[in-house]
Each structure stands twice: as C-alpha cells, then as structure tokens.
Image (cartoon, rainbow, N blue to C red):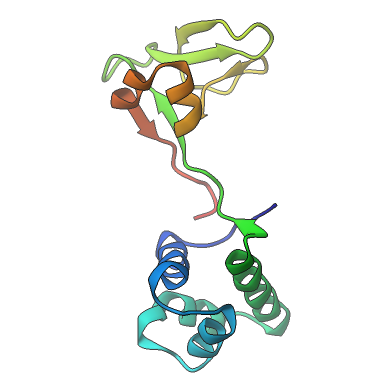
Length: 138
C-alpha cells in the first residue's frame, strides 16, 4: 500500500469526500479537477500550480486512492496524561513494550507517537488524553 504525502488538509478532505460521496470514479474526479470543478477547489489549485510530471503523479495518486492501492498516513497522537506537564507523555519501550511517563521527544528505543488503534490496544480510556501530532509536510 502506497502512502500519499504532500497533500494539505483541505486537499486530503476533498479527495476523501469525492471518493465517499461525490465522484463515482477516479476519471470523473480527474476530469472535474482539470475542468476546475467547484467541489474540488483545493485539488484544482494543486493541479494548476504543478508541472506535467506532478500532474501525472496527482492523477496516479487519485486512481490508486480510488482503487485502494494508496492511502493517507494515519493520524498520530501523543498521549499526555497530565495537561501542561511536559513529563507526562506516554512512552512505550520498543524492546519490551513497557509503558513509562516522560517527555514527547523522539528517543531511539521509545515510541511516543501512537495511532488511534495503538492507543486503544493499550487502553481505550487513553483516547481522552490523545493530542494530535502535527504533520510536517502539510
């Protein structure tokens, strides 16, 4: 499965909504974007500001997304158990899976960013303390 990167939140939202309840096929969506369809303003702007090779990549991304061969990266979260306390982030040791509290900095043997499913697998009640990690490329 290919991971789609380089999309703004609005572009991602438009592509997800187009697939779920807007455009019946990838070709219809690509034609709508090229024709500056009003429902996909952010995707149309992306198309207009990119060069031919990047437009080809955009079309491939859309086709792969529609076919289930590509997806957006999953949202990652920190779990901060005490608000405004920099030492209260959940950390999981990658070697033995023990859980500790510490900062949210990246450390070689510790995981500090978790997907929603990883948090629920540890303890579903921790979702109340989940803080979204901001993506660098958006």
